[in-house]
Picture 1 (cartoon, rainbow, N blue to C red):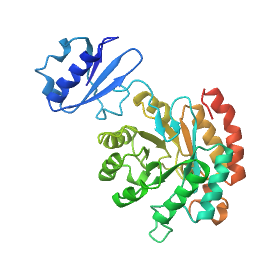
Picture 2: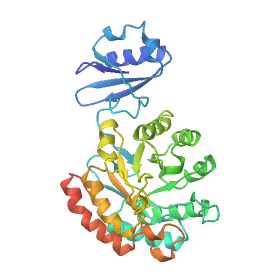
Picture 3: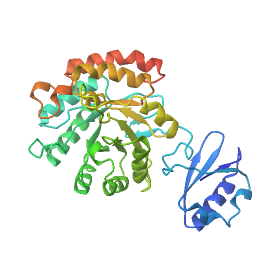
Picture 4: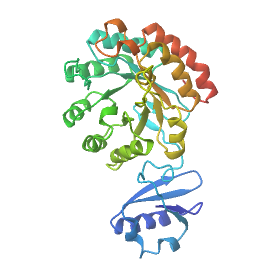
Length: 337
């Protein structure tokens, strides 16, 4: 449930509501807008049945939230969230571009990619140090060695860095080197991993599961946020359908649906969605057109030589051209890029 305060409610009245909630063993989530303050209640709301909270000073009304996700719910936080990652923001008014190789293969490979994507317009370097692969015999990543290269790339270029984590050990290592954690599609409902990511102290990008509904995805985000970490970004990367022309099927409608259901930023991964280099640019433009807050694009200095996801990776020239083509789309969407 959410408690909507009257416009201009005094801070003392708001704190009184928060105290009542906490005194009843529940969590209070405060959202202060330009006009209205909302206090969300997380937990068993029946504990408040004897509190007469509806007649407390400066309470306007109480609204029940029927969805199982609460903190991620737009009713709890009506205004779009802006996620701060170092000197970079993800959210309204900006178009965030995350780019880099699926797998970190060497220092030179990563640094050359970082320089190229920074020059083209990216603000984040993505790179896989822990690579969960379908086959146990495929390249699994350089782990901490790769993370050290990420740190070097950040120091040289100023790009923010993001890396997928697959275990508690990976989280404990990654937080020493990168600015943002990524939970991949295969781990979207690894609830223990989600909780540990929520405790890590870094912003988290949560990819949609291979066959997850939007509500399941938002409940996964709730696991992270329930640990006190509200800095969550959602990434639509395609879902599994009967279609085989593309690696996955991009659910482009998920972007406007999420914009209605949640306040969290939403980015799109056109590389994993399509699996085909030629489709990355048109899908990227479609994502911006429907309101995505950013893109995550795979880029490699030599896709033909890549140890992972070469067919969907852009060359440096491909990526530079894509960024140039995206600028008018970003402008029409009212976003800085």
